[in-house]
Image (cartoon, rainbow, N blue to C red):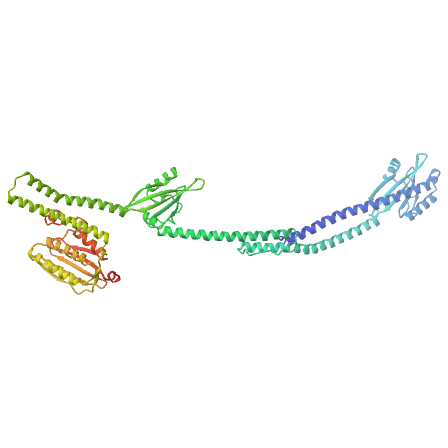
Length: 596
């Protein structure tokens, strides 16, 4: 109940009025009491002095009790007080009370003694007989400076105190009425004062709940009105600031979404750490590289995440030098190019670092293959060139008969043919890698191509005492490079004829598998060891290097086949078992050709 500001305000008003009225009552009652008591004292003193003057002659000689008592009685009726006259021995010689009076008795009163000593005696005390408050005054009677007696007056204060009590009651009732009036008026005034404050409170509450379209109606131009004006101004600025903040948040959100999309779709790994080396960012590629969950490891050091300590050393060096650093990082069987940059503030303060990891594994493998290819080409070229060089030097150094010279020239011619074949195969392989088999495509009847090619190869198989058969169904025309497909078949058949011993057989089969066609080239040769089958399509790879060279092979035929089939969108593979022959498979997809 008393927790509201209105209640506290009303109580404050009432307490203030109560305190003011209490002080006023105390002051007024004290003032009235002192006034009436002082006035009554003056009345009693004046009456006492008059009685003293009138009783002076009666006290000098023998006291006249009747005269003095009559005098006392007359004055008692006039002032409403009891009047007693005593001589210098404190014996009562006159009393306003005739019946039960004190005539002839001693009256020992301190007020009388005080009057003889000080010229006036005075006291207020409660009467032991009546229980009422009385005022007592004593006035001395002198004769030539010698006290002859005293006049003692006793006045009941009941009327004065009754009057003061009535005034006190009136003041109490007035105070109660004032408190009720102040409480009522205070409630009205408090309501009027607090009404705009309540409105302001309601608006502030709704604002705190998120409703910023709030304004307060300004009624008066007082302090609360000025507060309302300032509040309305503040709300207008807050709405403007909120609008700007929302625009900024939207821009930041858009930029963040862009950054997230960029980081998510980057092919490179990105890792960022703060100045303490704790993870603050990692994109999915980085998670995949180092096999960890970025969300679960945020705030951890790279060591805790078990990321290569070599990357941590890059970060440490960047923190030390505050400049970009590049290098390479090997992780598992992958190689990455690493670029680490510091994140600096405008004041040059280091906030962290970011690393970008570019996978260069394939490039390194390609470089390795290029080196191996150059080495293989050099090795393959060196053998026939060495043979030609040796033969020419022998012809120059020795006198040869015609038959020997012709034999040497035949060997030179064979080596030159071998060199020409090797160079041609290298040129074909290079051209295939450049063109990827997508030049000179035309719709081709593959059955006719295969039949024509196998018919030309048939005599060669017969010379090697081999049985050659084929079963090629009718295929729908396919968009291919006819010469390249023919070269694939020739290369596969050439190997089969070379390595199949006499009495063996060769067979070519075709099959339409719906989305693609499948060609099988089977032989009953010695087969290919399992450990060599994975590398059989690599350049210059030979299962039996000595025998291959003797038969004029370059080691590039199967590599050329793979390039041609791959360029056409197909696949090529091998199935072989030592002592049981070999089967080469290759496919050509229909849908790729139909789209062309």
